[in-house]
Image 1 (cartoon, rainbow, N blue to C red):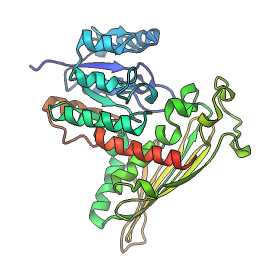
Image 2 (image 1 turned 30 degrees about the vertical axis):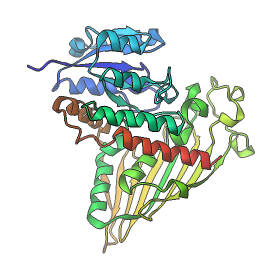
Image 3 (image 1 turned 90 degrees about the vertical axis):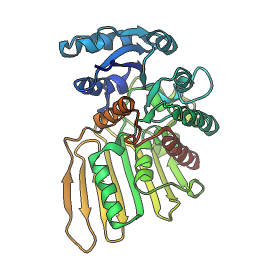
Image 4 (image 1 turned 120 degrees about the vertical axis):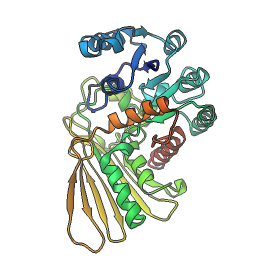
Length: 374
């Protein structure tokens, strides 16, 4: 019987343990995976140590997974966790301002590389300058040559709907146009760092990054020099919003760092196709509205509400019929986590669809849009 894979969590917040406005929750997916692969969680690291203790208590309250969490320790400093528990792999789920750099104390990935720890890194991979991200990317590539595995959480690459779109594109030829529309529900986003572009990178880097990544995944690389963008800024009359959560003190955030309300961008892909994106911070309550549309020679694909209903509208060449395909039972978070764990078990990264190097190119695209819109 093989030894269990030792897992560490860096960050005890929503991405790793669930809650908030998203369907994420790596811990629960790992519990599902543990039914087929032996996993134990050796540590949870978070500077808010009481939060880490609370999520551990919650996990231990489920007797079905008691063994998985029985020996888990809580740490205030992730480096202490790495050195004491020696995990085989970690899930990095901290805000982007706290990782993705070669400069301490934001060098979580570098510390993991130095200890030969496999990494699942949540998006966006950084808030750091491009030069630092390039340096770190080169180090991750070098570590991959000695068997270290790094996967990035662009979960839509594992979505059955997106993979179906890719299958149709491969069959009928390259797209000529991509359009992404993403309007988030802001009134329940009560994390102060999200409203400060300096701390989260801004909504294009932190949120619309998924649609930029799908664009690159389905259509191809982007000519960054071709990007043009504009934005509706928080300081403009139409940038005033009525439902910002009461705990968000936007007047205490420097004006230059307040998140834009709308961003519109256009670009060319290196193969000549045209791309566009519209992102908004405008809706109330919880539900986002989003669509991705792709036009090719004779076909039109529209991915409707990918975060919830996930319906794919398909019109194929030589046809006027529109078929609606539903993917409501698809758990792409579980899929991406399973692929990462299996890569460790089998020492084979062929199933990983979002490498660190590829994710760094998505990061460059989102930063280019953000900067062009200023």
